[in-house]
Every structure is written in structure tokens, then in C-alpha cells.
Image (tube, rainbow, N blue to C red):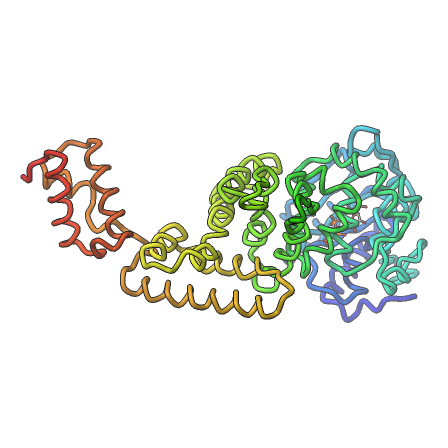
Length: 473
Ligand code: CTP
């Protein structure tokens, strides 16, 4: 089969690569994700991989020289690869390799090979497709493992015996699931079995690489597809055991609780319909992790998970640390949402007093909408009249909050009176009393004793200061 590259945006580049390779008596092919996505008519590429049956580094340098002698080429000698940027694309050149991997590392030892050797050692048949850029068969698809059928039938299959492919590079287990989840493909049966057998070997892969794949699963249209595959193959309990600990339904004295693992997957799918914010999706994934360690049964209350939001938000930090996820504002955002995840529901149950609404506004600040998005996604009941009721309740709370917000401007709460002003009023040096007075002002506003107004705050501080034995200046 010959692929018509003339229509391709990169046709000029392909012609140039072809000509330079020929001048240097080198063969050259496009391989990997670019070919797969081209055949699937998918998205704009960000990188193109080229293979030559001799030195990739030499070819990269020659091509870069031809494009622009000043182009900077990055060379990775150990891997026999070189890359440079051109027209916003990463162009990577590699010498065809036969590879063998050692038992305890992903780092391959490299030996020169033919194109077919190189295709064989790739992860999946759909990623092992090559297009020739050689003059004699320019545009010809070279597909020794019938990747084209797998593309058509939507199948993830390895070119070699699956155990060999996954054991060579265990990250491919995550990649298989990621491709299945993002492309809506099926992992072929023997492959799935091999992943189950080899799952433990994921431990030799760096957490950063695992998370790159995991986050692609989290950003897919329906993340539960990938998460279920991870659970089914045994990868999920090795990577995030806190999640699989939520699995199962216990029964005591005829009382059961819901399976919080499957519930969580539903919440993640629900939220993914409404947001592409990765960290909001993570908040959905982790919103119930505190439930396994707080689960209790007693005769009076049945099953309870007291304080699970608080414990869950504490667990987020350790989890992010272990998973090598960012520990700054993204982590704090997830912690905050996990901690507040039951508050709007509790508001409905306990009554929507203005002070409770103000407190929620204060605690959630600019993330209030996201908290609501999470809470709505958390409604997974299959009972449609209950669904309706929950949704109505939410609209009611949202409306009430809007009213309070308009009145009291709590959302981006700035204290109406500053520490410096209090120091000046009572001729104080920085001291404990100032902190106490500031806190009292905040509490009085949230409780509705005073409004968020400077003059009211001043009078309030004067009264409170008297109780502390302070005299006005
Ligand atoms: N590859 C592999 N094993 C890996 C990673 C990559 O065999 N663990 C091969 C595949 O042939 C893949 C190519 O290297 O197509 C390029 O890898 P990469 O750029 O990471 O992924 P893509 O397949 O291009 O897919 P995407 O861009 O969606 O990540």
C-alpha cells in the first residue's frame, strides 16, 4: 500500500529528508505514532520519528545542516538518537536497533539492526507501522505485523510474544491501557493475560513515567475505561492501593454500604463530562479515599465514615508525594476539594443558615464552582426521583450562596480591618492580641454578627479590645 504524502503538511520536509538520506546512502522511514495518527486521521502531530538502518545521529545532523546550519541538534549517544525542532515539531532520528533489555531496568543495550528488527522491538503493531521515504518506494507502507488490520479492528496487539514485549519494557503495560482508553481500542486477550502476569514489573519503572500515562488516562473521555483495566490487570493496587481499598460491600446485620470504588469511577466519568481540568478530575478520583480507613459499623448508626473528608485530604499529600505529582498549588487544590466534598450536601441536611453558607464561601473561595461541579458528579444514584431531588437541592443551595455572596462579599474575603490598623488603634507592638482580634472580626462576619464593613469592624474591635483590657489610643 502506498500512502499519498503529497497532501501532508510536512511533505516538503519528507522530500528533504528523503533527498539528504539518499545523498548519504542511508535508508530512512517515518515510524511510530505519527504513522498511526496519520492513518487514523487523528489530531495534529507534535513529533515525528524517523528510522534509518545506519546512524540516526549522523542523518539528523546532515538534515539539520540542510535546513539551517545554526539549528541545535540534541544528541543522545547511549540511545543512538538525535533530535531537533523544526516548524514546531520535534523531529527525532534513530538508527534501527535490535534491543535486549536487562531484567531490572528499562534501559536497553543497543545493537544495530534492520528496519524489521526495529519494528519488532516496538510496543504495539499499530505503533510499528513505517512509511518509506526512500526514492525507490517513497510513501510505501511497511507493515510486517499487519498493524493496519489492528488499526481497523481497533486492537492493541504486540508485534512479538506479549510477555517478551512487556517484560522488555514494563511501561508498555500502562501504554497499552492508555491507548485502549484514549483510542477506544480493545487489548487483545493474550496481551491482557501477559499484563496480569507481568504487573509486578511496573515497579522498575519510574513513577514520573507511570504518571504521564496515568494522567493521559485521566484526561480521556471516559477515564473509568482505563481505570477498570488497571484494576483488572492488577496494576492499580500496585500504584494507588488507597483506591482499590475502597472496593467491596460489607454486610452487618443486614445493612450494607455502597461499593466506594465503583462509585468513585462513576464520579470520575461524570465529572469528565463537565471539565477537562486534570486536577478537578483527580479530586473526583480521591474524594472518598478517606472512607476505607474511617469505615465503622455500630448498631445505632449503621455504617459510618466519620471524618473521611478530613483524613482523605491529609492522605492526598502522601499520595501526591509518592506518585511524584506536583506538591504545590495543584496538590493544595485537590486537598481542599476533598476536604470540602461533603459540605454542600451537609448544608442541605443541616439547613442553609446564612452563617453556614458564608463559611462555605469563605473556605472554598475561588474554587466554589469547582466544588459544585464535584458535588454534582458525586450524585450517582440510579433512582431518578432521588436524582431530581438532589439536583434541585443543589440549585437551591447555589442560589442561596449567590444571595449571601452579593450581600457580604465573602468569597475573596479581605479582613475589613488590618493588623496594622489594630496596632495603631491601641498603640500595640506586634503581639498575640492582634491575631486574636483579627480572628474575632472574621468569626463575627461569618456568624453574621457584623457585616463586612470597616466602620462596623472598628466598633466591634473596640468592644472586644476592652474585654482584653486594651485601651484605645
Ligand atoms: N515506543 C515503544 N515502547 C515505549 C515507548 C515508545 O515501543 N515504551 C515506540 C512506539 O513505536 C511509539 C514510538 O516509540 O510509537 C514513539 O513513542 P512516543 O512518542 O512515546 O509515543 P507515540 O506512539 O508517538 O504516541 P503519543 O504521541 O500518543 O504518546
